[in-house]
Length: 205
Length: 194
Image (cartoon, rainbow over all chains, first blue to last red; front, side, top):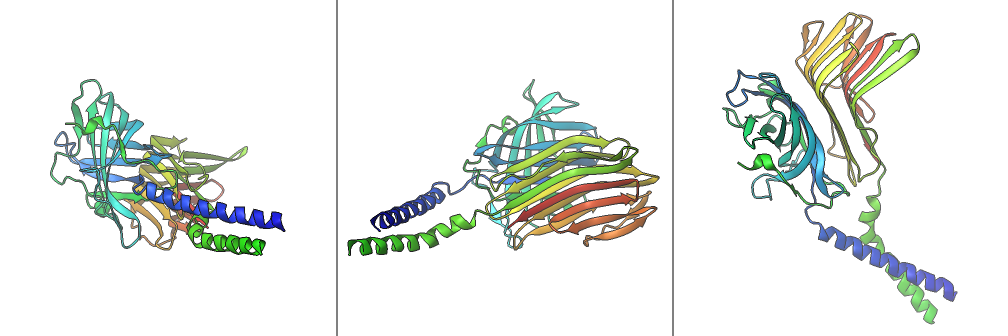
C-alpha cells in the first residue's frame, strides 16, 4: 500500500510539473516563425525592360526546426525569358519594422500578412544572384494577394532585375485579370520555435 | 491515516493536471499530407510506368514541413510545365498542402491540354480550404471555362478530364484519363488531420 501510494504521489507531482513546464514553454515563445507558400503569375514589364508579359512563380518560405531557411523560388519572366532557380534560402522576414502586418483572415482563421523571402538563385541571364521576394497574403479568395521579386548580382552587387518599379506595383494576383494564383501564410508548426530573421543582401539598396 | 492523506493529495494533483495538460494531449494528433505537381502513369508493353515531378513525399509528423520545386519539368513527350511546386506543412491541429504548375502542356493520344496555371490546395480544419484554380485552360485548342465547381468533368476522345477533382482528402487541379493509355494528374494536394 505504501509503495502504491508513493508511486501515485510521484506520478501526480510529475504530471503537475509537466503541466507547468508546458505552460511556460508556450509563454517563452510568443511569436514563433510561420510559413508562406504560393504559386501564380503576374503581368510585368520587368520595370520597363520589355513589353508586358507573364512572370510565373512558385515561392515558399518559413522556419523549420527554428531556422528561417525553409523554402524555394522558381521564376520565369516570359518577356525576356529570364529564369531564376533558387539555391539557398537565407532569410524569412516580416515587412517593415519586423513586426509586420500579420492578421487573421476571418473567413479561414488563417494568418494573413506580408513576408520577405530571401536567398540565392541561379539565373540564365545574370549569373548567380541574391533574390528577395515580397509576397502578401490578403486572405481568401486571393485576388488581392501580391507578389514581386528583386534580383541583385552576386558579382557586382547591383540590382539586375525587379518587378517593383513599374505601374501596378505591388502586383496583385487578380484572378486572371492581370495575374493569377494564390499566396498563403500558414501558422507556425511545433518545430518552429525560431524567429523571423536571416540575411537578405537583395533587400539592401 | 497518513496514506489516505497522500492518496487524496495525489488524486488532487492528477485531477488538477488534466485541464492544464489537455491542450498538450489534444495536440498529439495524427496528421498526413503530401503534394505533387505532376504524376503521369502510362501503359507500356511492360506494364504501368509512373513518373512524378516536384513531389513532397509524405508528411512525417506535426513538426514536419516538406517542399519540392522545379523551374521546369517534363515527362517524356506527355507533359511539360514550368515553375512547378508542392508543399505540405503540418501543425498541431491542421495540415496545409498545395501544388501548382504554370505553362502546362499535355499531349496524350491525339488530345492536347494546356493551361496557363493550375493550383490545388487543401487545408484541414473547421475553416479548411479545398480548392483548385485553373487559368487559360484549353482542350485541343478550344478554351474551356473552369467553373470552380468540384469535379467538373469534360468528356474527351477515349476518356475524360476532371477539373477541381475532390475525393476524400485529395484535391487535383486536373485529372486527365485516356482509358488504356495514360492517367495524368496535374497539381495534387492531400491533407488529413485526426
